[in-house]
Length: 297
Length: 240
Image (tube, rainbow over all chains, first blue to last red; front, side, top):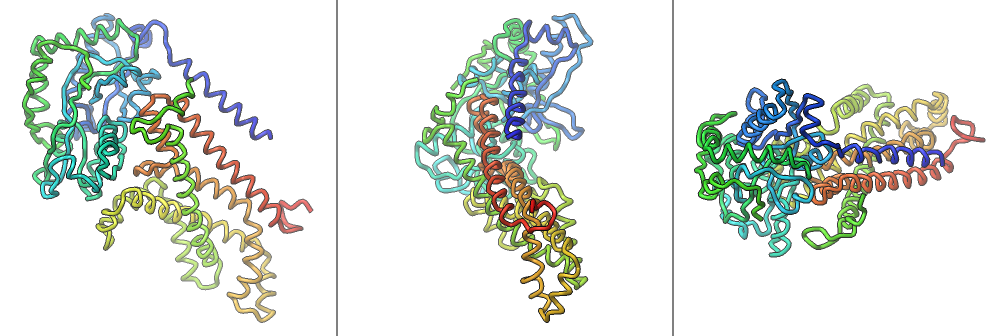
């Protein structure tokens, strides 16, 4: 009996954790008081946010995140604010933003209506489409070709939900494996366990760039959805969101974003010096003209 | 806290989130049982080998224990899942079968072989804890060595090691959570998926915790009955 009482006590100890997550005064005050801003980043979201060959966090979203940090420093007039880098995954990024471990997360997070119930999104920083990565000789050209075959997705991504949903609705019989991160998903694809890997097109190009023989792989299929990437932060923190939105909007309308885009999508990037050669889409051009934080769903 | 999420339907619509948790629980139980049967069978054989007079057999079983006990379970799992199919003949055919079957078989083998090393040590300890007179008496009666093990040593040792085996059984269930890392949809994986889809981390992991506690409490109750029946009068831990 006393064992069960001990369990009950342990469970109750967990209860205050949630209460601690809601901070009065918002993120800016928290940063001002602590002198630290916690920046969530990804480990293998090439070219948005990932570790390069020197284990430094780099990428398109990371460059934008650093601009945001500069803006926060300026706003608070505290040039000494420290940046605490927190690696996050597709699965834990939203809980970590919600519970305050991370103040702002800039990686490859799709802004959609469902997630807007959980966190707030900044102005859109990138627009992608969901497609398939497959071996050139696999014979797979589009989603219906996957019927009855094995496919891999990264757990917690919008592609995971999308593929499960399409699979259920159209009764394709695709056997879906959910891997821990994009790196592991690609490993499952490369080792022949899955015929295709479904993800956002740019990220697939990034995985392709990492592979041993990039020439063996191709990104294919009708784009399944358009997705807008934004930085995520806690909900209902207007001053912080306004500052971030302003920073991103200025960057986009002033054209300051273009060198960042070229650097990561049209020039050789670490770790292997491969060029993703990803042209600026009309949608992105339109976005840069009139920045917004709308989900595309 | 909002526990209504458990009765709301999942996005693909075929069940509720609670249904997902039960699918996970079912897989956890099936995986753990499969691994436990493997561990018990192999561990018993290895445990006996560790006590036989032949030095070669003893060394073989000893080496097994050292390898499987000293490499982290997670590393072993990745080796079985990512490395072994690449180097073993037929591995490429294995990779083409249903992904769930791949994950389940790999996990059961990995967890079973890992736990076998631990069961082996319990069996060895059980046999070695018996007074040497028992083995000698068996041999003096004219029993062969295998017969001495079968009729004298093992029945005694098995009764002595029930309590440590109880904790190994519980360990198998807890260790099975590691298998979520290769994509096996077991209880922990479903808990994480629930967090992904609903963002109710607190409720999801509370439910997962309760389910693990319930399963392990059931094991302990069951094993307590076994323990009280198997107790050897006059030995440590017996009341009479």
